[in-house]
Length: 452
Image 1 (cartoon, helix red, strand yellow):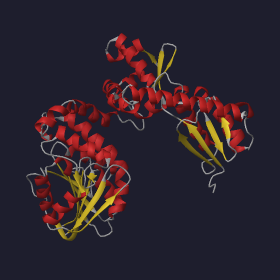
Image 2 (image 1 turned 45 degrees about the horizontal axis):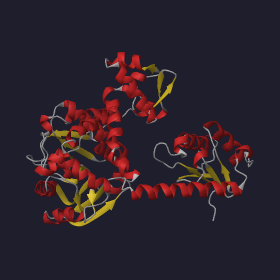
Image 3 (image 1 turned 30 degrees about the vertical axis):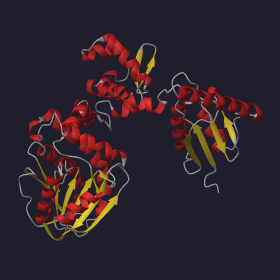
Image 4 (image 1 turned 180 degrees about the vertical axis):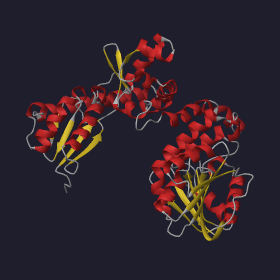
């Protein structure tokens, strides 16, 4: 079976520093260019691209293998990619000067590299050295901290269309020597480019990190910046069994609240249409969005059902942010807001749907039972409660994102966690809900739905 005219394998094997490999020779840029050229030439339905591990010609990467012919290209550059796409994939003419033609020599090189790799693994294992992948995970905080500091300082906006380290330092009123070291590190992470003594944003940093860019994510990423301090207390939190830095939302101030809601809004806006389609709003005329944050889900619901009216219920510090998004969406006539505290205030009555997204993980089990009791009272007969959250499998070890997020709640809340399907089902049944079903969606969160 060959569903595509060409199936292209490109090595992107990540190896320890100093070890020859395609990644070290720039395979990431080659792959990115290849994808763009395929789309540019209208070959998306003709050419399938698959990144893969080492194919054995490590010193001569980046390497590409093209099937069904079995053509092996080596030593590719970004400049070669356009030629291969137009000549080989579009016109059927192999670019001969880039092809490995001596089969026996290729096989001998692969065998030599394989033996060398196995010998290195054996020596590492016998010496009791940490496996490279494990060591990279352990030291992963260094890369994370570099990127977060760049976001916090707004480095990418300062680099703008190009600047020296001294110019960036002057703009931001920071140390020039340290700035140069820092910018060089960002180049090593492919988030900046360096030409002579000047630094330039890459397509990725230009798109996501520069102020005013269409997909500027800095405001939402500041929430992750703020998580750094909490996560540094993880060891102490494990000993205490709870957050050692906890503050109520109302006491955190705009410096924390605004980035937090911005982060939630960015992810919710992308996810909301799929969630709303999955839930189905055909018979819903009145919806309560508990802890609705920016109002992204209520806005998506109102857009999906023109007869629906939604109410965003959240803290007084959050409601102005939600109202701004609602006004910008032009839906203030059908999406309203109400300030309140879900732990203290009733929700009202007569709703067809109570939507609870990214709330239950902040609560203890007892608080979630109380939340569902209030939701049950707020619903009309046959009304539904829809919970969206990180929902663990019953052994609580997966999905991995949910298991790690439980620790995010340990360092950030008094009694929150990620909870399992069995726990949610138990709470829903205890509070009177029936027809309970779990719906897993692409991505880190799932839905669990109960009917009154």
